[in-house]
Image (cartoon, rainbow, N blue to C red):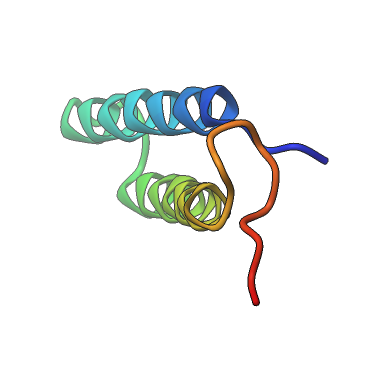
Length: 67
């Protein structure tokens, strides 16, 4: 599976929007604090995995050649 720069950017932007939305909902008490914590943790893990895979891939999605 190719993991392109565009895929990584879309995942990261969606993650940022989700993190901000979760924080706003938690501040306005529309969701419980524990729920906001779980959502934030899941989004952060997805972003971390996406960043790692993006880091070890070329912009076109091919893996970086190691020697």
